[in-house]
Length: 248
Image (cartoon, rainbow, N blue to C red; front, side, top):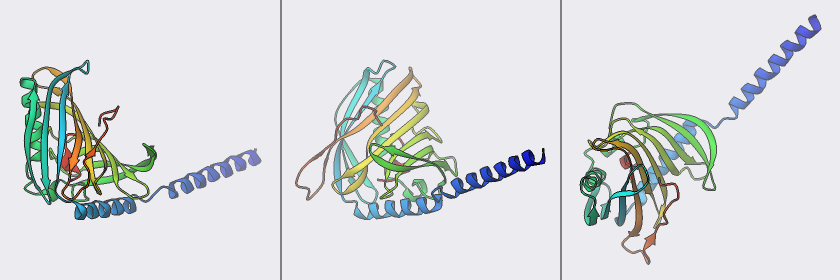
């Protein structure tokens, strides 16, 4: 009896030690966040003026396009932008897309107030995961205040270079009067030596007609001094709306 009890206690001790060892092997979230923020800061230093042709679509429940807008958007660091609508269709749905475009390109009064930073978010390590061939740390991000520019969700950080590959979640507040209960996915990639958001998807209930999907995709980039136009390929899983949560 005592031998059996002793064996059980030793097994429990071994399990506790193993669990402690596994916990100790988890990446340090503070180190990840430090290097991620340093990489974001470095990327900002490399930003230069560029123009992107961006396609916006509003899709219904059957994934049929109900409205479309194509715009040329010019960004000039650190926080200037202007746009020209190339073409648009879709009646009331077009108005939704124009409103989203205007919100995305408006100059921030305080860009630091809405960036991915320790001032705006709490971070928690969740897991490691491979995303499109890159090993990533997946962190939970929790806003520290109620702000329509902030997102409650997850961010995928490259385990090698600490660049952000994806951010997804729900805006703390709706970024547009037209949208309710929205969720968002943003994907990032390198363009002309800059790390930029390249595609964007929001799923939301629209006030005038139920649940819709808003997809925006960067079609091509022009940068001064670049020898060629950078064109992007459409993703099978579209990926959004609160672009300012990361900063360009």
